[in-house]
Length: 284
Ligand code: PMP
Image 1 (cartoon, rainbow, N blue to C red):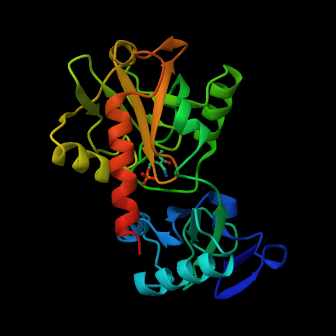
Image 2 (image 1 turned 180 degrees about the vertical axis):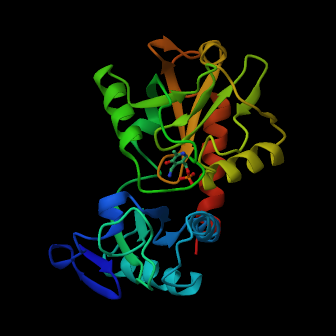
């Protein structure tokens, strides 16, 4: 695989980052993951907007403008022959003597990108749906910034796996679901209302979420943007999650309790199909 590191395209074995990189020492960096369908990038503009916001929130200077980042994404997709998969991009504050304070002088940011070839459209998880297990949300309180500080979501995923589930739903102190470890969470109530938590510092503002909420509205689904509790979710008729890599993924059980008929639901499948059709048509 050819990866991109600070201006060069190199075989992954030759890629080098300093041990003093603040991404490595402090998780002082942000990232984006963009889906590739038919060799093209899905909602690249949305990912760039969120990237700019994450960078601003951390006073991180950008190593490149959107046009240059698009060119690097495309070059990597082409060099690695990616038809379907993901492009991961990470920007960190760069290498400086270890110190909690940000470096005072001008330090070039580190920019790293790599591709992952994998099926997205047609996966066994999407056909069967996934089980989720709930865990307390023990992350920091700026989950709206897409930082590379992902240890708790990783621990939560391991806890879910130990319980035989495919992913974790994290739950706030009041018993409301915040989001999945790497996706936004939704239920469909018995009355057929799609419910997903409002945007705030409590969750990542998903690019897929924005598209799916809009598609639900455009196709005449009833939608409520509000928190839902685990208790309400257990009584839901459908549940699903969204992300750039999973698109719209059915959830068929929560903590071992079947949701609906424990198979991908009708609203979920309609949204998945509509999302993929639109993503494919608008990819660049
Ligand atoms: N929430 C979290 C915590 C995530 O890590 C992700 C994926 N990066 C999402 C939600 C989904 O965001 P997106 O649709 O932009 O991939």
